Amino acid sequence: MSESVKSNLKIWITGARPRTLPAAIAPVLVGSACAQANALDNSAAINLWNIFFALLVSLALQIAVNYSNDYSDGIRGTDQQRVGPMRLVGSGAKFPTAVKRAAFIAFAVAAVFGLVLAASTTWWLLLVGVACFAAGWFYTGGSKPYGYLGFGELFVFLFFGVVATTGTTFVAIETISATSLIASVAVGCLACALLVVNNLRDIPGDTVSGKKTLAVRIGDRRTRWLYYLLLFATAAVMVILSLNFLGSLLGLLGLLLAIPAIRKIQQQAKGKDLIPVLGITGRTQIFTAILLSIGIIIS
Image (cartoon, rainbow, N blue to C red; front, side, top):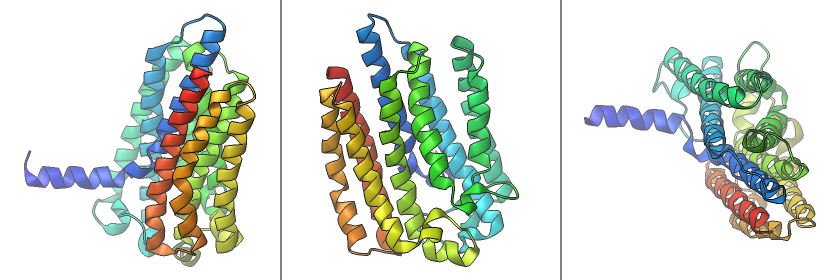
C-alpha cells in the first residue's frame, strides 16, 4: 500500500471518529446479555448471527451519522470554530460531495444488514430502520436540523440507548424483555454523556455559529452538572437491575473509570482540555457495558 493511499485511508478513518464507536458497541453488548438472560430463564436459544448483524448495523449507523454531521456542519460553516478533532469538510481535507457519499454508503451498509434482520424476524423492523436513518440524517441535515435546536441528547438517548439495546434483544430472541428496557436507560445515559462532553467543548464555537445545542442553551455550568447527573443515573439504573440480577453491580466498577473525567470537568477544563475527557468517557462507556453485560449473564 502506497503512502498516499495510507494517508487517504487515515483521513477517512479520522473522519469516521473512532472514539464515538463505543456508543454503537455498548447497546449491542448489553442487549445481547439481556437476551441471553431471558433465553436461560426460558430454556431457549438466541440467534447469534442476528446479534452480529445488529452490531454491524449499529457501527454503520454511527459512522453514517458522523459523516453526515461532518458534511452538514461543514457546508453550513459550523466547523470553522471547532477546537476538537479534525472534520473532513470543515478542514478542507475532503470535498463535501465525497463526505456526503461516504455517509450514504454507510447508511446503505446499515440498510443491507437491517434488511437481513427484518427478513429473519419481522418486516415491521423496517419502520424502525427508516426512523433511525431519518433521525441520523436530520440531526444536522435538512433545513431545520434538530441538533441545532438542542434535541441532540434526546436523539442519542433514544436511538443509541433504548432502540439499539432493546432492538438487539429483540432480534436475538424476538421479544423485548423488561430487563433490556431498563438496561437501555443506562446505555442511553452513557451515550448522552459522550455527546454532552462534545457539546460542552464546543459551546464557544457553536454559540458564534448559531448552533443552539443543549449545552449552548443551558450554559457551561449546567452542562457540567448534566454530565454528573447522567453518570449518577447510570449507576442508579444498575442498582435497580441488581434487584433481579445482583451481578449488575459489576457495572459500577466500570463507572470508576470516569473519575479522571469528572475531575477535569470539576476543574473547569475547556476547549482542547476536554478532548481527553471524550476518550475517558468512551472507555467508561464500553467497560461499563462489558461489566454490566457480564453481571447480567452470571446472575
